[in-house]
Image (cartoon, rainbow, N blue to C red; front, side, top):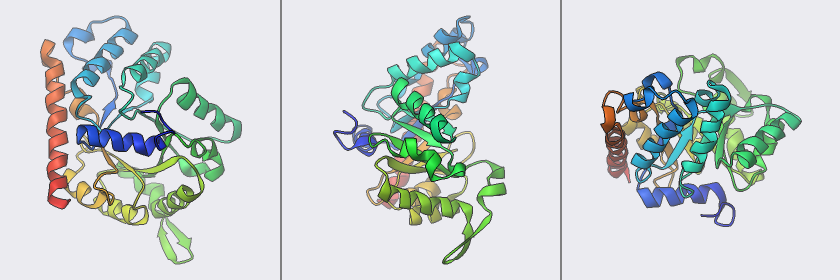
Length: 289
């Protein structure tokens, strides 16, 4: 699929959903100490990470909605890690969305440079962004009609309420800041060409329901369904859009490290973990759709 000519990132997302019957997003977050034994002894960091990610992609490419590398797990290894990220992007099939979890946010030319790096140099289909600096800081991303932008809204961590739950005065009364962010994303969708979405933790199903009501058509990236203990059925019940999709349920550790102690059979263990999650999500969808 060619981005832009076929409707940009949303069309890419819809195509992956149809092809794989999946809402599972797999996070590609390598930790060298948890690689399976056949790779743990590899001295070349780039080769170890690329081989690990290649095995995950091979095992799961028919089961996923999207892949989501987290930039931090590559930057931790300096240049070798960034080389591994570049190669990982090339390994992700072009019909499956590749979403870079960078949570980026900055001003003016700095933001332009970040957008050029993530979208042009590395060619990711979407990126997560931090809206704290306001709309103008996100303009270099929002102006990309062929890409996806996932705006941090209500994150999965216990301390998210420190700022995200602060009451904001609006014309209709007070509401938490995360709902104000959701309102802004709905508003920006009308004025900017990029596909706008939100990041909402699966640990907050009540807040997810509120956000989906404010943003009925925007895709929602939902981290936390695996190791963080997010509840799948409740999230699916309140988070799907009107088409029965538009919800990227993201798991990293529970999938990619499923074969941590499986020796040479680690790839099949990863596949089984992804298959189990994909099917659990689909079972929850069938109850609703």
